[in-house]
Image 1 (spheres, helix red, strand yellow):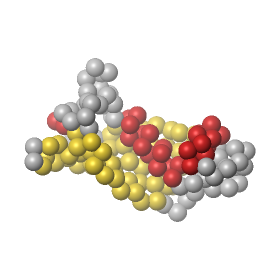
Image 2 (tube, helix red, strand yellow; image 1 turned 180 degrees about the vertical axis):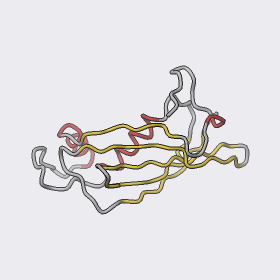
Image 3 (spheres, rainbow, N blue to C red; image 1 turned 120 degrees about the vertical axis):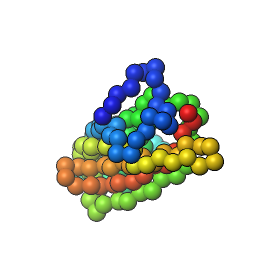
Image 4 (cartoon, helix red, strand yellow; image 1 turned 90 degrees about the horizontal axis):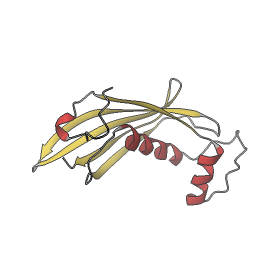
Length: 139
């Protein structure tokens, strides 16, 4: 993992396929679940650890890692798409997931820099979600 100084934004030239941006962990606690319910409803019980949580909550974790691990970024990037591949496992209240981000590839098209980032969400050795986020990078 290569950290960049807070004043030095990632530019298209900085990205190299295979580069790791590191990892972060997120605990699926009652506060996070309450925020999910405030947006999407569902009436989840914040003390029920037996019921699986909505799989969409993993997508929010993935996007949080994408935004948090690849910093600092220039203004003006465009989210051009994403793909998601869910594993068979489910998460429950109190689980901690680990998120990793790498650069999958980059290409130039019509003078614009396109970068694909690979993200994975795991619990231990189990992959719960993997996906790509494709961005048109501003600089």
